Length: 139
Image 1 (cartoon, rainbow, N blue to C red):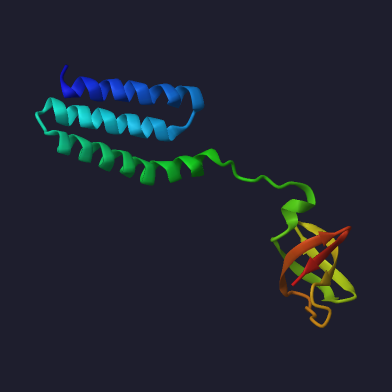
Image 2 (tube, helix red, strand yellow):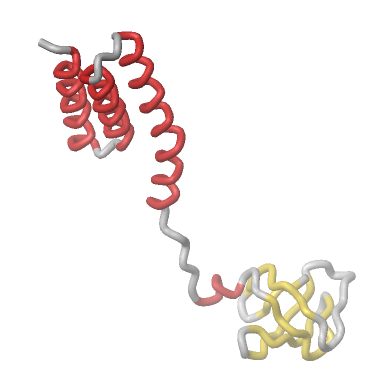
């Protein structure tokens, strides 16, 4: 039996765990085996076949795997008061450690500073660090 047939058998053998386990790395190794089969069909020696298999498989694992992981992760959708954390607001009334008022997401909120010694004057831009009950903590 020719070497390229063995490489194709290896590719099918690597495709089976891909389907059963949903691990994309097996698919990348299967593509490497198909590339090695092409080299064998073109008359390349055993060393060239193994080198092509290793290079193609490694390149796919190093390039495709991180992209696939990023695509698999869904962005976090925050809602309610969690969505307000990290946003900017405008100071309406002086804000210090004891309180004040800001305009946040089109609404007026009571606010206090994260650092008790800091203060912000009307018109200043502040960042919302957290929401504590009905009070925005800003800096």
